[in-house]
Image 1 (cartoon, rainbow, N blue to C red):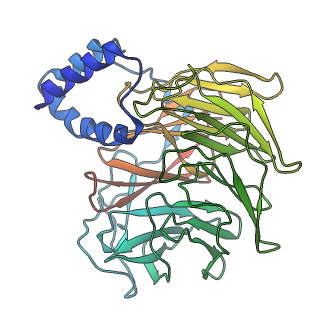
Image 2: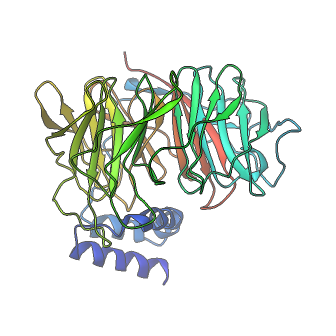
Length: 415
């Protein structure tokens, strides 16, 4: 099927259904559309895609004074440097792009990795090279990688990082269900005791300030999970938490400082939801108690959430954005994300900082005036975005499955 036929078929499907394709193929189709979009625009099909779907052709543009985004330095590409401990492999240096400074590429030409930034400003990534797992650290000067081979069974399907002031925790999701920890100061890795519940792809993994909380998720068998556990560094043990009143097939969660907030939905094999909206749960570790909260008025098919100073922020693949006011116990609408709607799985940036939404190759920051500000975009496939103070770290590749590369950008908050 050529590009025109594919877009025509997509519009036909969307006209007859409000639900997107099953979630497990949304990313692949979105990335394929992203790669074909420039060619489609040249063929005059970009307008067909937008007009046929009944969408606006241009996002709203805000005054530039509300966000100043740092442009690239004078050099056009990153200076590649790595220690002899790092794996070698084919990799190409990233180029500075529209406000993003290219960083040295992840060692070994890695195509699968997880990434985070420590409180000291070091970039940490765990990657696989020749089926061997490595931890790689890019120093605060953003010039040199240092690598260490890790003695565990690999990353698995859905590895996750959680960063605290002095520790990193890595859920590997490999066959052994290993959970690792790294001390930020010593950079030494160790394995935690085995997770006490059955293996799963976790629904939510957060740091509570006292421990590592893992809840929900999916098994290899099609069933929902409503249990979880907390790891305490003080005791070195896992403790099971109360079962939730709901279990979901799709979950997004965030930590508020005192509670875990979970937005979730139950979807069938055709991505159809049991309810017109997702549901909202709140878990308080202090009394080991779950509450069912008012449901967010967004699509149940695909969504993301994050916590801001003003409450819980949620958005969906249709770009709708809402905020839960904890004082009034109700949801209120916010301006939509300033993107062209596409078949994209919404996501957020990890780490600490303002609310950052990721949508295909587009990125936006929610400013203090409750308006989204779009940041300069890349043509790359964005795999992850990490916040660290006033810096954003992007990890992406030129194509799906290609070698991963890094960029960094800084912005100033509005005055």
